[in-house]
Image 1 (cartoon, one colour):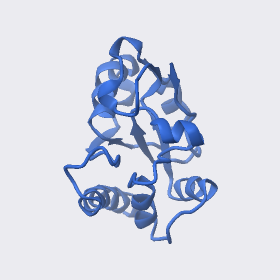
Image 2 (image 1 turned 90 degrees about the vertical axis):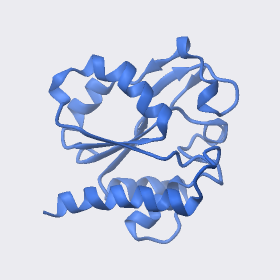
Image 3 (image 1 turned 45 degrees about the vertical axis):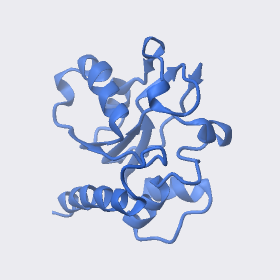
Length: 173
């Protein structure tokens, strides 16, 4: 059984980025997106207009400073390897989003890091959280995982930054 990580989230977060569940490299290091070829932290550094993020403490601080929360849809599941396609559907337990959104009332945007996160959220979470969170705006973005090889790192970066900068403009108004 795989157990995900607690969220990285300040009380004032406005954006929530959701993955599915940590991969093997992340579980081993106990860090979100720890695989060296995953594009996630490079995208965050580009968005925050800062140099490459080296330590995990730096990475978490940049998220907090930019009012970004990070979590996974799945709290527990069984999976062989790191691929989302290997997650055993009947083993899935989701995180408590109703409580999370009540504690983080400023979140207005939810970004899915890949298709699996969006699919499981829509299937298992939306029916539970009810209409009190209808104000949330959702975006599915390409997975930052190296397993998602249809897009280059540069293509992923452009797609992520286009959405994140659009959201940033929303808060600048």
